[in-house]
Length: 134
Image (cartoon, rainbow, N blue to C red; front, side, top):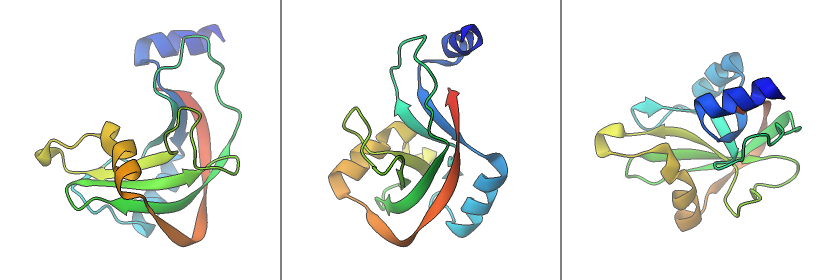
């Protein structure tokens, strides 16, 4: 636990899951980014987690849909533990791609999903989740 706390203080207080690197590459092939800056690296559980918060226990999820706002941001919606709803009222998602030239930032993904909704996939895509601080 002490190592996790040290990692949290060095890297921030965002708690969630990283994507497996090899799986990420396959997912980027399956769902090509619609904007020039591919992100596709994590799912947030809590963006302001206090130090000492335990890592999440879930290790699998499913990509169940996505959205591109047509203005430089694309996100994939993720179901974890049977829900897409985060405890903070947001939606579990992966910021897939953005256009930094339009000053788009990953933190905007939840607002885009809340405003525009998302399009479900015909078949959910299983993903491996690696609990992490970042």
